[in-house]
Image 1: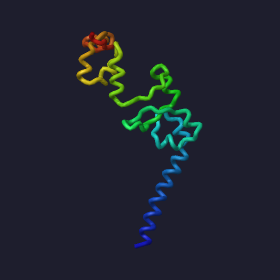
Image 2: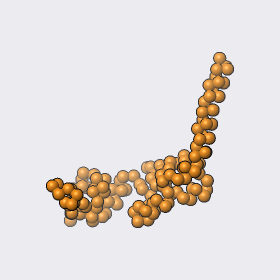
Image 3: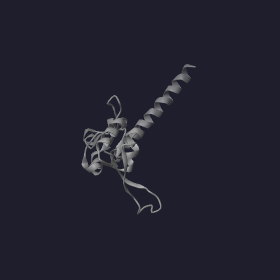
Length: 138
């Protein structure tokens, strides 16, 4: 009975060791990813950690994911902003006068009523009214 417990523990720890070894061998692949998780971030060296910044945080300000600095410069014109939960995104969208359809769908129903279609995309769908952007109603 005791030997069986030792065998089970050995198998369990050997599996963990093999998984950790695979992860250690793939550190170069982790550095090539655009978005990584906190456990992958903690495994990187200090030089590689400088290449990543916090992308999302949860309500208690703990990082959920990290993004490569090179990639964040290509989106949003290089603003290195931390993406907060949806409520803060909605507040940022409400402040704008003209928003995209993607931003429009982030809004709640009560805030959607504050915007109307500004331009329609007739080139894409000539037989339907498909919004290109929305404008705030005064």
